Length: 117
Length: 113
Image (cartoon, rainbow over all chains, first blue to last red; front, side, top):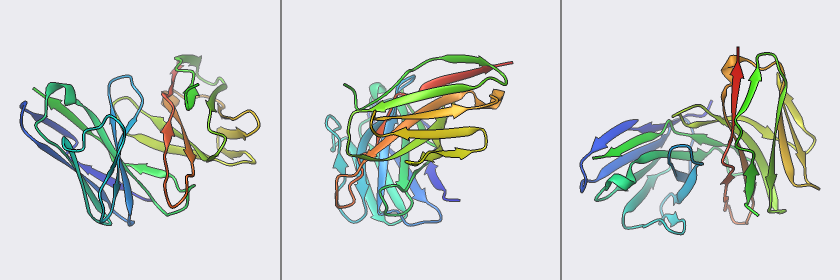
């Protein structure tokens, strides 16, 4: 079945540093990938839609200069949290649609638990 | 009204019980529907798509009621391993390949021995 790989699964960094998270679709091409954030006991919140070869589309309230998204190929999207602060500590999850149909399901990466100290 | 609403639970049921969750959605243009399960501190995993005619996968049955704008998930013969949070996902198609997926907050299920 379709697999989306996310790396790293866990990262601890100091305040002010930047962290890059990779999301790869392993056996299918994904022109669109999605980045979510989930705080404890909260629902998934869409941060941005990553489009291959073009700029990402950010949701309202998400700072594009802080959360840099690059989708350089059909199988890789990266999210960089720049100048991380403790309030950025969260569970970040990427996903990709297999297929272009509106009813194609999402496949999720295994998530990255970010802790900023 | 929130776009996608679910009863957060928790639903505490004994093993072997039948349990049902509902999820209501506000956008009548919604075109695709899914149930995902999410285990604690893990990523969501697709449980099943929801088709207009209703569909069944083993102990799980999903149904869609477009008139009342809700989907449901029925779990029969609950197992301990069914304990998880069940997320309702709704996708209104807004044209040109744009898919704005909306997640419910999830319904927590605990199956008790």
